[in-house]
Length: 117
Image (cartoon, rainbow, N blue to C red; front, top):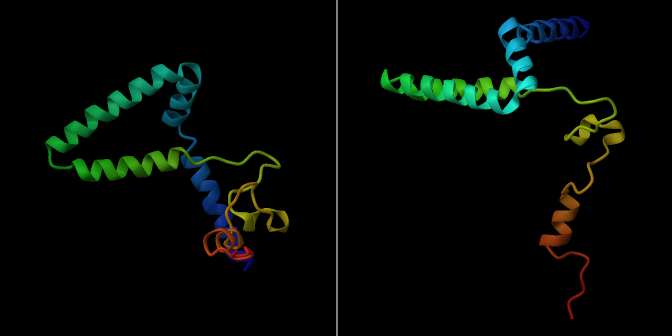
């Protein structure tokens, strides 16, 4: 089990290093300096590339790859003491405020604990 955890830690370090390459660092710095300009340039570049890919019958593959890249680029880390959206990762499995649970569903939808007049 210890070997498996060390492999996972190694993969995480490789993944973290892959997201810290110069082009992505430069893009993040540009986005921090001029967010609107960066958004316009990024979306314009993506649109030109998407049209070019569609012209050579590669549009769907480019679009799916774009979705994957967008998902990877938006991965982030939680701040210290910030609860996870998944209650199993929170201390004592605490739920987020306003989170719908099976108990709420049964009470509201199935009308349990209500008297019929």
